[in-house]
Length: 272
Image (spheres, rainbow, N blue to C red):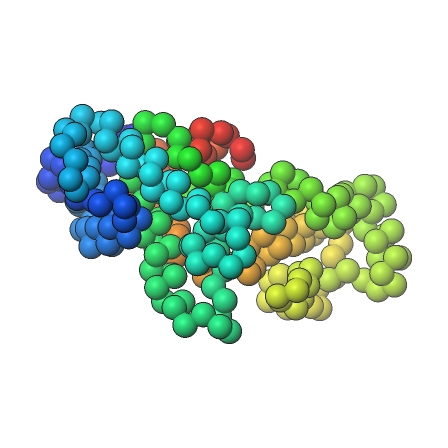
């Protein structure tokens, strides 16, 4: 993976070493990954040393570390009261960034920083991981990591109820007319309101822009993207920036890395 992504004249060090306490695997790993310089993370070999353990890392300890961090990231992700940086999507039951509770959370800066470091970890796993991480990362997160757009098929996979109620009716030949007749008014470029966010314009001037058969597909793509991401855009951006800090988007595109490729590398499943 590394050879395909980088042809840099900069000299890389041979190893990137982490000294970790197994009992504090996430905290120690995050501190090390946050402090590491860009070129350190690109070292061709990764060595992990657990405090108090004598094992020589010939690759197995590094894989154990990836597995341990993956388990730690997924732990408590299904709890609404958890302080973990990842959470389970309500419908997909796959991992996405946990939205910051802006009205009550005084540690938003730390949350965003941890998501940035998580992006670095995922990039490191892409470079060095020899087996999938034990964490079901959402396919649409993989799309963001490689700069790919959300598609209608993603919505059908991730939230079949939303797709069936909001998308499918508009895809039939007379769907737009039937939906507008049921609403009693024209459909415009506004998002679907949720418990946390009111309806918002899907693009500038969207409240006044009517949906037509010509722009229907664009409307549906924007509608799905907003439903999936509107409540966690800042969180997604932090994760993505951490990933791109190690594996720049230009390098990913030069290597022709698709979201499905990344999903297989990180989770063992195509999923997109």
